[in-house]
Image 1 (spheres, rainbow, N blue to C red):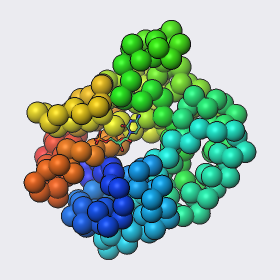
Image 2 (cartoon, protein in one colour):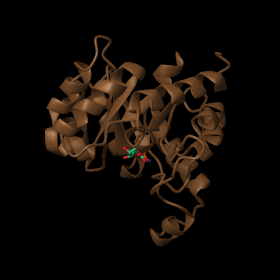
Image 3 (cartoon, helix red, strand yellow):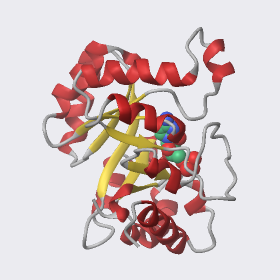
Image 4 (cartoon, rainbow, N blue to C red):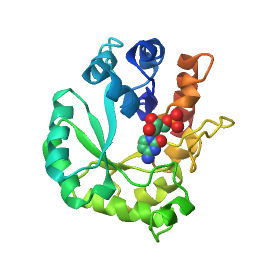
Length: 236
Ligand code: C5P
């Protein structure tokens, strides 16, 4: 897989008018564009269409809705996402095995379900406050086993947990947000690492938002991350 296909740009913007200029600058540099809750709640399927039409070589669309509801509702939502041409869709692994299996059935073959394990904004004290006795790494392992066992293509975890997940599930698609180029502010992400380390640890797809958005030249920031991923893969 080419280095650019390993980078998912998080197109987090309040509306399409503000998303489009960013999309035009960054879409040619990345293989995947992630549409999340903020933009999808405002713009809906138009946001998906905008990504697909942003460049001649349409980036793959990753719809990050982190669905978590009863199985039937999630199954139908996943079917609707697949009908929009979305290639990756997130659900919360904590929704349980039946919900995860229903998401996979609804999504069909063209759309892969990726289960969010522990949000990368959560640290050990947050998990304890939620009544989770596991440490983050053990909680991620537990939810990963559940998601892969239920038929999901992969999981979302912090880069710090990617190596352990890869060791347990060789074929799983590992998606890691919480990725910060060296020196970039971590924001609200609690468990972060650089794109190079994430890929070396086994991440297939690294998600980066603010370090690209906030750069003076977002296109160049995305190219820089792709270069560092290529270097980590030994492609340069
Ligand atoms: O701006 P930043 O690089 O922190 O963006 C990370 C993106 O990844 C956001 O869109 C966020 O919703 C998403 N995400 C995350 N943690 C997860 C799953 C998705 O940060 N566990």
